Length: 421
Image (cartoon, rainbow, N blue to C red; front, side, top):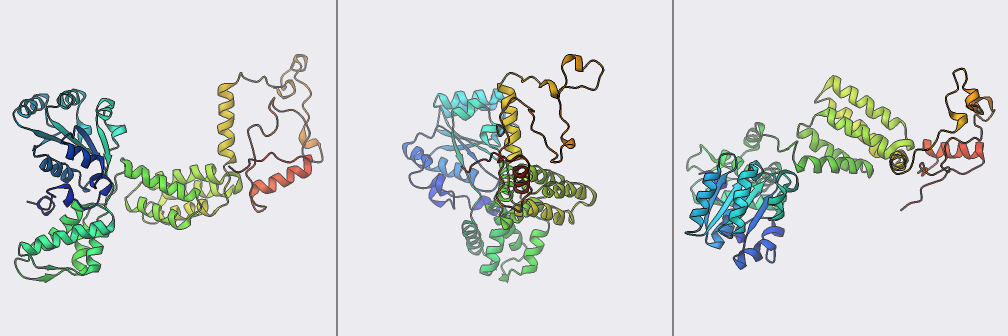
């Protein structure tokens, strides 16, 4: 039996980490104590204890643990479990429950609602996205988080203790324990699998783990990055919010997480392009130029050199002064267009290049370039100035501030500004 399976906790007290889910006073504890578990969904990334928690709950409730394979379990098998549950108490566990069909889900819900058996489902996807609304509405949703490095160290030490008890005299320095804990990405199963691979083949002889052995163990290890799950979107969200927040170190960290996970460099570059306009905008027009150039560059060169180009563009966005006036302006304009009757184009702005246009009244347009100022005072829309665009210039060094000052000198009027808050 794999080491990770051998070390499964027998009760919630033995679970390492996930205190918000398994700790005293938590909803799961209260339900177990009351003997009224009902239907529970555990979700989170792989290797963080979903199955272990389910088995521990079954043991504490004194119920037989019956796992179902979501991809292979048919309706007949589910109904057979319902018949078994009427004879003795069951806890039905379904891993990757999002693979259940609507029919399977309906039969499972019928069992739960009749109180015939308790049910725990596990999924790596966000239940609100991947499960049927009926199952979500009838279940207690509990989110598990990747284990902290301190919790991971406890997992590794527990594994070492078990190996010692079984006669495998493995020796690791505190630094090596922390390395295994850190490089496992909050995945306890991955850490224990690595530990097991280090211990295999040494027999009963005492041995010390070397750094070379650790590097070999991780050389072929898969990168723990799900490009379609919650973790992906959370890391992307942290990346763009760090650029918006002008935190260069955080920008590089989250970018490195994406690069290390094998994220498509073109996808990253497209995100940088969006935020070059959304968050920097008129404060520094060259940020968009850098981002567009970065996309073209990574299409030509790929990894590993693409990571330098992405860092260049991301840091430009992070370090640049910020203005959301372009993003807010177009959002306000689209809302106005959607909610209000269409405004008539003023006669002097209408197309006048064809014969007969003047007879229709398409006259009166004044050519701004004929004025020494390059500007004339004429109506361009029925909306008052500042209805949609409001400057967010913050300092004299930005394009938007220079533009505000230029047009104040030319027109004698202040550009409407968006006040903070």
